Image (cartoon, rainbow over all chains, first blue to last red; front, top):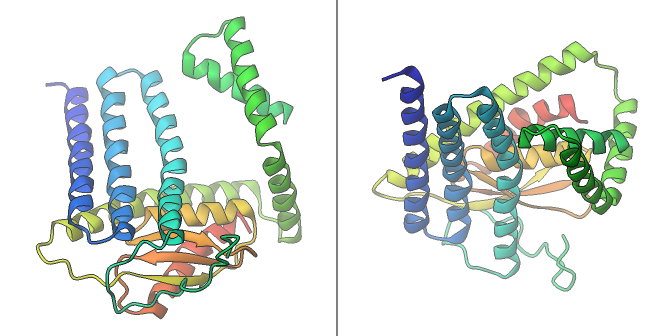
Length: 116
Length: 169
């Protein structure tokens, strides 16, 4: 087994494992806000791992550079998606799980214009 | 903005691995459309950021590069840490968490800085930024597990905001 093959297997395995964890998180966590955490984080590292795996599989610097570009774009867009999902859920008043911690956003929204 | 357009065309050609005239035209056209659509946002941002920076004390280019690099290393390290933490939480047999939303007062003023900070917050342990107030002074962050609200707030301010502030005031 060459080093490239080993790297491919390593990164692909780590990536797939984290995507699996993210889907477990969606099943296990109690409300939408905590589920966003699972997908937004574990999903991100999962995709990064798989993309690195692809880059090493082809073994050319050009493919690896493309994958790095993809990772960069992904890091830019995935937090925005997580933020929009969370915000939309809050605006449509999806209930959070009962908790002792404070909710300092409560009552801050202008209901009509949906502005803070 | 014309420079940006040429850069887009070059990136397009590099990603297609074809340096022909046709590809240059296609890349240039797409870049043109993107810039035309986002012109208003781009302009505001460039002007605001340069205004903020000129007021600030001058940092040399090597110093800025070093700081950018250390921010990137810090970012990747915290992404990995975040994942392990969330993974541990998901696997643990009993979910014992206290999620909540905290208001974080912001010192960062530039749009780029705020964007970077909120993305960083979303990608790091147990926090997702939800929304920002209209006057860009308060960031609302959802925490997976709050043991001590003040400590959580302080950690965000000291760990992330200070680093982002160094680069984008």
